[in-house]
Length: 316
Image (cartoon, rainbow, N blue to C red):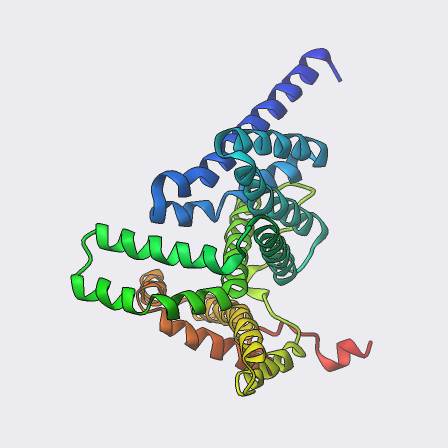
């Protein structure tokens, strides 16, 4: 390779690395500066590093991940560095591996969510001197006070204060589900963003999956049924475990229902305006997401997308 070409290649690599780390840190920090508005932006923080890992290789990715950890540690302390590792670097690595090795999207999202949930629960248990319960209680109190400061109606604030103990117990018991939901949303958003990049800018190392093929193994429906059955057991720990498992599986099947609906939109050439209205309704009325869960479960028997192997093909 001529010296000029080598220098240009190194310059391009350094530029990609600098842009990727900067963008990842900006998206990661959006929650700190933009509060609620920054949360959707932070869901895409792993995407730049995932793209960098595919395009420039794992050594460059690891160097940039360490640089990001150092920057997050200087800005927000040890907790910030840990959060960057769990919410940005690790999901980015899994997404890059998934794109280069042809992993199914549901496995990439599941692995990222499981690691984020387990590591976060372990870190909270190890670092909170009084346990997770008082920490959750403090968060609930801070949220109610912030709600009041933002001008919420007095009757609403009073009702929230009266239900403070019930709210604290609920969020404490459902913390694993909330962390898993956050991890699934983070991994899904960044995975789709990275995939969209490589659809527009193909790379020989990347094999973008078809997002409308998301489906869980059919056997997982028994886990969904078992989680629902645990809610009927007159034993609080069993009901708490069942509620967490049911919530996580429901979101996974909602993603499957989303893929089915997206496939129908594509197959029937539904107008873009109709699709936008449908997705806006889901945002405005989250209870409509139960429709996606139902569609995802029914997909086990309908298989409208024909994503499962045919019996004759499975038999060879």
